Image (cartoon, rainbow, N blue to C red; front, side):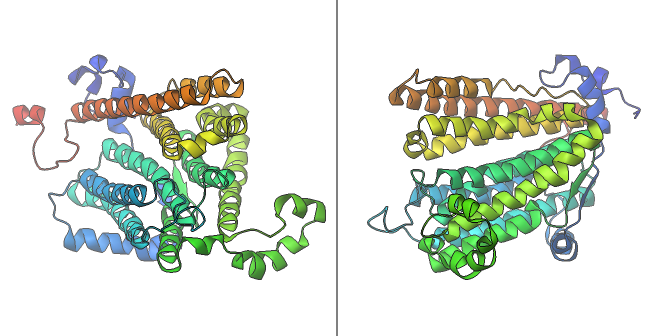
Length: 422
């Protein structure tokens, strides 16, 4: 592609920290190509978002502000459930003497639907106002990455999964959305197209999540620890046809709880998309070498398993800290993958932020540190990671704004350089 403006010279891109001269030349001419094949999106969600943009959204509203406003709903929901369900399993009577209120789950259901609607509106608002930019795409992608982790945390609380006894279910609900998100970005990195299948997470996945929260707000968390799904549906019609040797390993003596079935269905659904639909297709098209970009995602699956096998009490002691560390590493890796795709740069699969995770894993695996030191290192890792991500994304947004001569949350005020030219 060519452009009439050499951004690498006009903006002194060589002085940027995250945007090299090549990135500064590639980013302004980047064109997004994507498609959502979901029938619900095509016939319901997209027309709804378009109507809200056309008739109820002022032209001065910045698309990135709409995206951030949607994320704030999810952040508020996460904060509420963190306050009432700090350990995530307080909704079960066996772990708590007095059960917390259920209304935060009703709010979570509304928040997820509001987030989904606003997330569909931001792109339409950018086209309406003529303010589409690579920054908007990256900002939207980053907020979606953050939301995928908060959504998982809300699911864990809604299902009442215990960090002490339900660790594989928690890992499944955390890793599955991350894997689907990361693999989709990885596919876009190579194909330069974002194709969402007819059944996908941003549409059907969020609707199902909102439905789950609504059910919890009415039926209570303990509903998910019953056996209705297994006894009435999956037991007689699915697991009954498995060989006895396999069924005895998978199914406990008293059967599978409803929350176990949710975790299994999530793993099977995401696994089919990640490994069969996308993974094998990508290896066939681009060779086995394309798998190297999956190293960060593989690390976020393998490292927690190794840590849990060596010391299963770490998650029990600090469930939120573990979640925040995984969330921070995932957001850093997947947004950098998207940025490198947009700037036509090679992706560095060995992320510097993930190196401490492997060092920590080795220390715990070989028993070189005790529980107290492990807790201190984990909490310090979380704090340093938050500071690093805040600084990194602030600088990236500033550099892209300077390169494109736009504001992140303002589409009315002229950028200073534009003002001088005018």
